[in-house]
Image 1 (cartoon, rainbow, N blue to C red):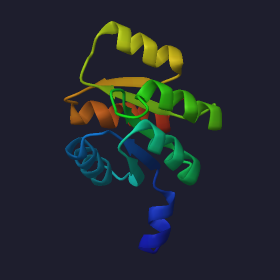
Image 2 (image 1 turned 30 degrees about the horizontal axis):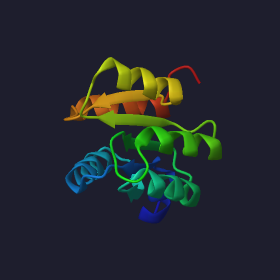
Image 3 (image 1 turned 90 degrees about the vertical axis):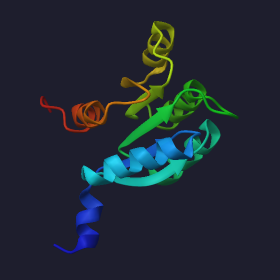
Image 4 (image 1 turned 60 degrees about the horizontal axis):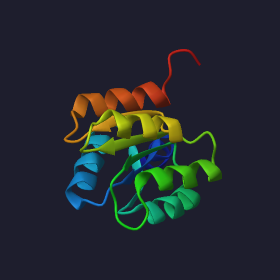
Length: 132
């Protein structure tokens, strides 16, 4: 199997965060664990556009961003694809943020700074469900 075809079967992920270092950290973590980061965005408006362009298997997205926040971007992504798999990230783990994220349609929620093992665990849970 060539490296190109191997790349094609890896799960595709869109990383969205307004902080460059968070995006870089996530990209490194995901790549190291066998995922393919096919695009990144620094705000919600760009996230919706990148989702349309790339049709990722999963989105990891911050809530607090300029232009369009993560909640509004999530709504936009779900209009494009009601089955979109989105994990929301936030530095604020208050129950209101978590409730809103799940209510709007996020499949999961992670708190920043994130635990690397927890990120991979949540992704595996969504992309490789045991009861298919």
